[in-house]
Image (tube, rainbow, N blue to C red):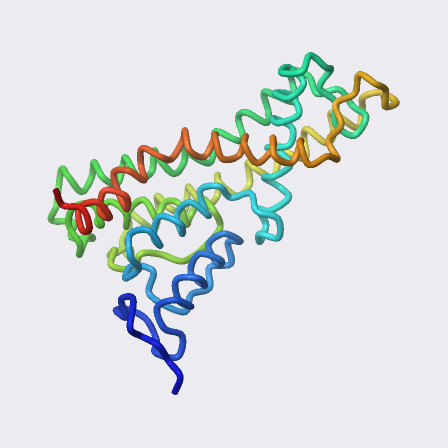
Length: 254
C-alpha cells in the first residue's frame, strides 16, 4: 500500500494517515483553531503535544478561526509601542498615535488568554489533588497534567479538541470550561474593537521621517519576537511541568 510505518507510534492513529501525517495535521489544526482531528491527540508523543498546545497558546496565527487577525492586531499594537520606545520615535499605527489608553487595553487582552488557561489548570489540578476520587484522570503524572492543561487551553482558544484520556463529561469541566470559553471568546473581541474606536477618533498624522514604519520586514520580525516572548514567558513553565517533563522522563531518564 506504500505506507511506511517503520517509525513513530501508531497508538490512536489510522493506518490511512500514519504517524507522520497525523502529527502534522494535529499541529496545523491546533494552530488555526479548527478543532478537527485525524488521530487521538492524547496518544501523540510529548513533543507533538507541546506543539499542539503552543499553537493554541499563541492563538494569533493569520487565518485562524475567529482568532487570527483579531489577536494579531493586539500584538501589533504592543509591538508598535515597544518599537517606538526602542528607537525613540512616536508609536504610530495607520497614522494614529498609540498612547497609554490603547496600550492598557492591549495589555489586558494579551494577558487574559494565559490568565484563563493557567488559572483554570491550577484550579483543576488542585481539585484533583485534594480529591482523586473524582476520577477524571486516566493517566498519572506529567501526562495527566498535560491533559488538564490541554482542556483549558482548547477552551480558551476556541479549538474544541482535547486529550481525551481526560474524563471531562462532568459538572466541574462543563462549568469551568464554559466560563473559560465565554471569557476567552467575547472579551478579546471587545478589546480590539475598543482600540479601533479610540484610534478612529484621533487626528490623522501624515507620515514623516520620524514615523515608525510598520510595513517592513524588520517590523514583522519585531512583531514575531513580541508574540514569541510573551507566549514563552506566560506558558513555558506550564509546558515544562507537562509535555516537556514527560519527554525528558521517557527519553532521557538519567
